[in-house]
Length: 630
Image (tube, rainbow, N blue to C red):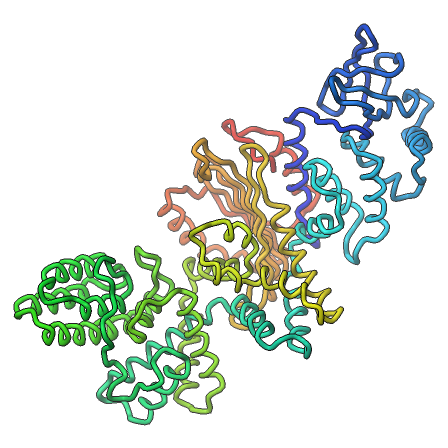
């Protein structure tokens, strides 16, 4: 089975929502309805699907007859005009549709008949203008898109009152796909590399974001190389040649100043820390010590003790060592000289500790959302560094190591890469997803509205850069098409995500590349919000659509009911059964840590009709008062 979209889930969700809301009619719309009851003054009760409403008819009709109606007025009351005769026993739906086409002066094409048949079946109103536009789309569908998928997209546009524009239509078509994102991005990157007309700065900025997305663990690999380079510099036994190579690598990547030497690479600079600000990064701690006046030494000691106690990236033994150093300093008379010596000792101690901890705490963050690599880099640069600055330095370290001809640096890189591969766990996957989504910039518009956002960092994300690129006058047609295809994919995620009342749906397509292996991962989350506006974590349904090199197409269906989790994995390969068995205990334990109970894990082969049938049943059934609209 080729899982090209998740239409059954998306569209049934929309249909369930529309059925629970009052029917909103607009002038000019056409729909198929039945006269249920007649009232005086040519008023009648009309039923459309599960909805009933009272309207004024232009001509007397018979109760029980079904017609195509057109809305001729909406204020102060709904007014309807009959555009086809009643559905008699001898009148087929096709004949009635032909009557409608003739009365509305619409072409009797196959596409138009398919549209009318679909909207008649779904009992949804649609205008003549919408029919004309939709017919054009059906006649010129992109390769690989079925008319059934396109009809579902058009239905969603009408139901959710979206603009009937080609941009929205194409975005929704792309947004419902569960594969191909990686291929679209690869095509764009290749054309970008070949382009000769773009400015070098714009090209490099785009390529840098694509590289970050393609290799979400590259910064962690670089941080391991940096940690090992620091250990070489502080070692008494390392050869001078290795130390010189390590020093040159750190200087070239921007981790150390250009004037650094083997003798002064860790030399302290003048303290610049604002005393009113409690330091967070280790480098700020050192600067804070240097900036402290002797009269404020007691206050400094209390700050250092609090920082050390709360630093979650240090082990208990390491915290004790730092506390002992602080205690020794507190016994000395506070002078500028003793403060400088104390700062130097603290810097050396923390630098060694964070370099040592890089291996075991690669994907861990402290209470301030800082990682080991940011603390280490702040100690080397002796200033506060942002996450973006840290990642840039670490990626530069990897790039320079790859390009280096020095065997020692090549060995450091190989060891670092192997360690990252062996460190794969849930935190690593969470890190990868966050890194890819952040640099894609799918919802960068929301970040622009957030006053706390770093606008410069937001502007560097891929999506805003694509908008800027498409305004470039010298853009080749091939590169423009590739950029638009990638942008349409991102817009599709936003359009297919959203809320319907208390129900919420989130769609994310993530191109992932792990150590040379590429895959498309699509996440669809359906759930509800609590009264306080937060996600209700006790109820949800999450579907993962994965396209992997070895396992091929895989769908993971996770259902959460009152914090009880059931997982079903769909794959055509029977060989995964023994592989999955030992992982069940780990999954059960991991869920228990988050106060969830694992009900069961089931491995099944694809059965599309059964899956769609199951989706419909679950949509119509309430579980403890919660409607997932799946």
